[in-house]
Amino acid sequence: MRMAWKFDQGNPIYLQIIQVLESKILSGEYKPGDKLESVRDLASLAGVNPNTMQKALSEMEGMGLIYTQRTAGRFITEDAATIKNLRLATAQSKTDEFVGELNRLGYTTDEIIRIIKGEYKKEETARAVSNLEDYLKGEQHEQ
Image 1: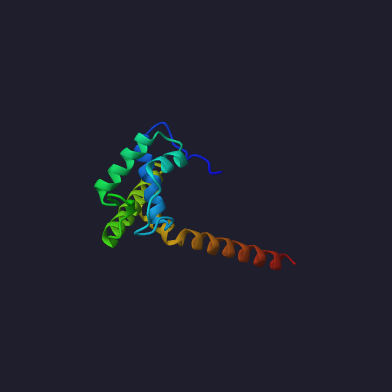
Image 2: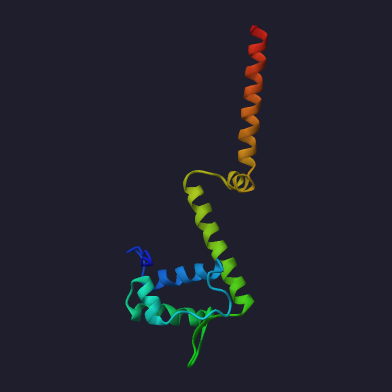
């Protein structure tokens, strides 16, 4: 049996449902053209009221992420541009959060760029190797 989705009390549930469903689209759990479960089934899976799920799905339809076929149900968009835009918007949002948090911790833009490129790790490794070499050379002189 699946557990209900986890929601925080700080944000409206329907917005969090949208985030969960967007994540499922971006991760490929829901593929373009896939049929969504019914409102009641999704609400049951999420552990929310069907009206809340309906509101989230209506918002997603307005965003172009899903569409409704009258008698067949709701489906994930097959519009590659819409999904690409969602990917870019999600990446930008996550990047903004990451950079903002590192700025609050005192990192400069240059340091953040070096972290992302993996240069800090390389620098730390090079420093450690250099320190070890210096130590070993010192040990050889003492013997």
